Length: 366
Image (cartoon, rainbow, N blue to C red; front, top):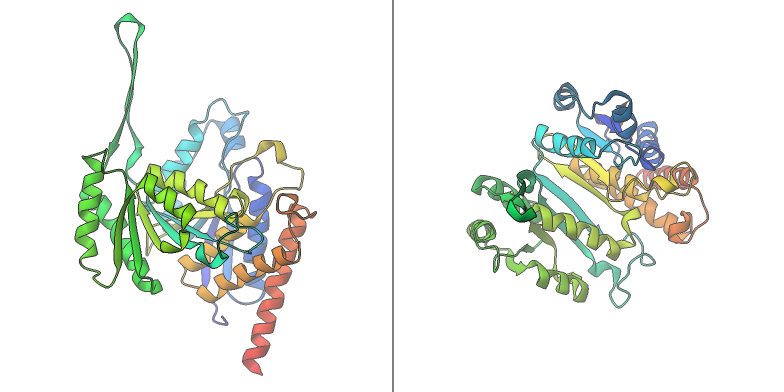
């Protein structure tokens, strides 16, 4: 953990509680820099609801190009401004970044920070530890379709889902390669190919083909309703789960409940070997903005995921251990049973990172 590396991080704080929790995540990056673990050069970009209201601009193409050329990762706060004239800017920012940066993996780890937080009390916390790989480049998100008014005041709405063999292949192959790198044995595809015969059958065909290249893996194909049943009944049977965009979106929110709520969960969008986009699972919660009560764990979890993206596993574990310590000692916000404010929790996480790192260095030199 002593080797220094340098990364450029673009920060878009977002809306509502986004700037508050993002500020605490940036504190953690600055703490790592101060400790000499890495050099994180941070640049702030204002795009979000407030900027959209002032200028009518959601996210310029040239900014996406700048991210591609000059940055290693993006930390994005929650988006959604009730005072904005419409919500189109949210779509422009999220889907603009995903398509403009060619991000195709939605990476969502599901694990328990501390036993007190998880909701399946009949399970050991270690049984809840799997990763969702979600396609974010195709499916319904490409927004094909429309609404048509017909005779006799009838309205027809059509939303089309587009999938390509190439797009499916790169997501599924990434899931198997991740399992290989992590020494994991189980890879599960979840879809609804028993009903959606065209697109989802193509997913199952590609999954079967690629699974043959990874003969040491236990490859399982499940309908999404059966998966949801089993993930509550026996989450320990899953290690790596690969799925489509819509199902992955729903599963990510659903599985946050296993961890202790959306306030502690983070997600990221990847293109391996390129740039990564990291954001908390929770929304902007405008009613809580400015009250210093919002949980920064989700945003700090994004820093943990960012470090994993950079292959800094020991430093990522340092963040995870610090979050565990804060839950253990009730150094948390009211939603987790504590009494601290957003900034205080961020300070305690940083102090714990510093203490644990210093102790580890003493052990190495002893």
